Amino acid sequence: MFAVFLINFVKFLLIALEIAIIGRVLLSWVDQRGRSGLSQFLIMFTEPVLAPIRRFLPATGGLDFAPLIVILVLGAIVRNLR
Image (cartoon, rainbow, N blue to C red; front, side):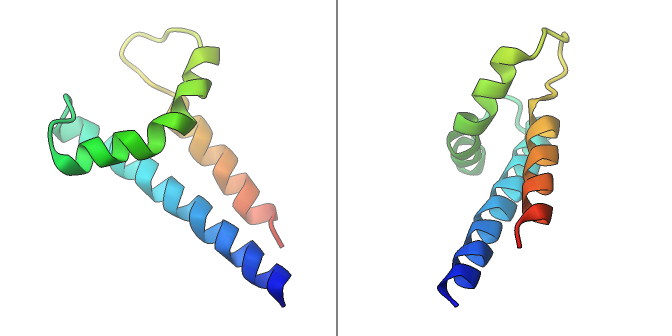
């Protein structure tokens, strides 16, 4: 019973992280400098996950593929948790 709770809790946290990353991407189109409080919170919350991925990706100009890669990996993890 505790294992089911723990798995569901981890799924919830991973989905919340996915939503935060999507929110950060969407807000970056509107608030590019991250001046609003929500933008600053999302940057603070998601940067520890996105920064290590960015270090391994080649420079692609103005495109940041780190959120896409993290969302794909998190989605695969969530789908495979039982």
